[in-house]
Structures are given as C-alpha cells and as structure tokens.
Image (tube, rainbow, N blue to C red; front, top):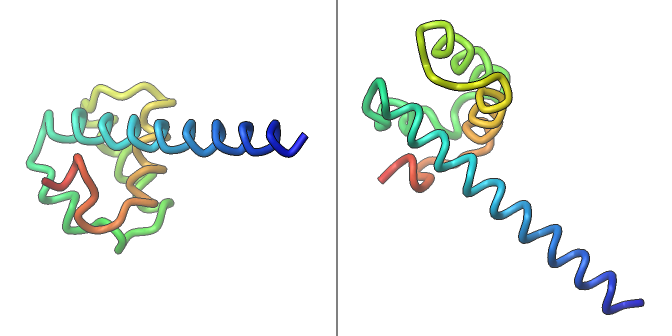
Length: 90
C-alpha cells in the first residue's frame, strides 16, 4: 500500500513539473512572436495572476495566437513565474 501511494505521488509530481515546463515553453513561443520577452521578464514576480490574465487577454485581442485554454495556461504560468524564469527569460 505504501508503495502504491509513493508511486502515485511521484507520478503526480512529475506530471505537474511537465505541465509547468509546457506552459513555460508555450509562453516563450507565443509571446516572443510579437515582442522581445525581456519586456515580460522585467515584470515577473511583480504582477498578480489577475493582472497577467488581463494582459494576456489584451494580447489575444491584439492578435496573439492563443486559444482560450492556452491563454489561461500562459497567464497562470506568468502569475507563478519568478524573475529569470526559463525558457522565457534567457
């Protein structure tokens, strides 16, 4: 039983790590299509998730190629990301 719980916990943690890496890559790819990511990196850790949500929605209305789900994923990631986050801030 303990082994099953440990395996489940390990798989859950691994899936969270891969999901976060995917969100970071998505943000880096889509945001850099229109502007230098240094502009975004300056604000990481300083803006709330709500402000990032508004920013991403504004970028979508300006033509950013993000589905509704992708926009939410990117905004959530930016709201959690720390200054210097890879691969966005290189």
